[in-house]
Length: 542
Image 1 (spheres, rainbow, N blue to C red):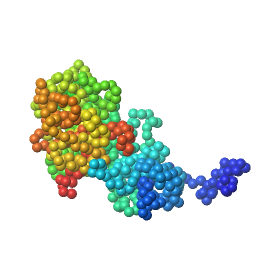
Image 2: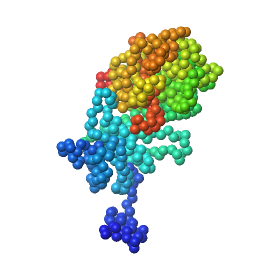
Image 3: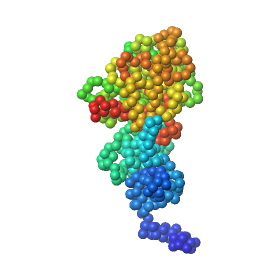
Image 4: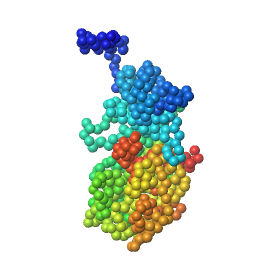
């Protein structure tokens, strides 16, 4: 019998003796060492092919994993091997948890980064290594929080920006309306840099950028999750103005019903008139190039704070999710705010029309005709196709600023969800350069986009109306997202570089994007910010 086993023999089962013998055996003293509540995250890659020359039996990992495994006398590596590392049992996003390995870190999380150095095919349209880092960092962060850890040092996993994004996005929880005992605990994360990486300063800068990007997307998620009764148009407009106040180069102006009526925005007003809550239009101005008065990009975001469908009322099942029908507005405000925090040298205008779509004795009826700001008349055959109505007037107004580029985004059609699922936002554009920049942005952020057609065929369906210049629904079945884009194209002036993003399919997440968790996603906030960054670099030649 070993000395340790004898210590637990019946005559020795006195608690103090057991503690003294065990602690003296392992720590050289009968005084238990203080175990810190601080956590540590380390990364390893999926097991390499055991038949590959020179790799058999080696754990593929980050330099920080190697450093700490040596510090912990190899217990990390031995545990991974013993739990099936070389049998493929430690796949991407999986974690192993260790406790009490030393006095500095009470909890150590080892997380799998998937296969090292995988190459994406052209059809994937994203950077799988960045996505793997985001997923791994998010999984580790959740594991720490579930273990009640409140502070941790994090291996940047070879990509500090992506690691920060994955961590902060995964930790998001809209629980401010719950009792404080039911709210998720906060977790403070600090980046660690391993050998072979760039300087600590540059890595910290990239980590900080990732945190800012994730916080921007989380802001959009918070706006979307807020219950509709707590974000009626006036309240949402005031909240955006308050939240963005003081951000560098930002100013916010709120327009009321009288102003909208004076501008001739009859389509916008028609959507709002069924509600007791007055509409609002929010203008956000960001001057990142104070030496220029030009507007580089105007962003227009649909802001329907609750969508019943109006007289063409929706089915009751899942109608609660219509509180998120202002996802375009949320991403517009969040992306411009994030661009300001990052100091991107670009001039932006955000136009956010905000309204409720409600049924009442004052609501627009199917078959009614309304007049948009540009003078075109619209036959409203379906009051549940309201997003395109408010966007029509907002797009007309946005072009008064003479922007070089115009982007609108909206949770516009269920048809785009049928076409693309939640893998990508549908993009319609009349400009090749804009499309190329947004496609590249989606590759970098993991918020993918996919180009859809702007054929005249779809526009013709919308302009074939019995009573007016346009109908707000297509003449034939099918292609609903395309006909919606064809409708919006009628409000884009000649020569205007324009992009429409239908984000209905990506606005909500169940488990598809592992580092987002369940709920509204705030997509494509980071892709918009990356588009702004790339456009600014192209314009300045940097």
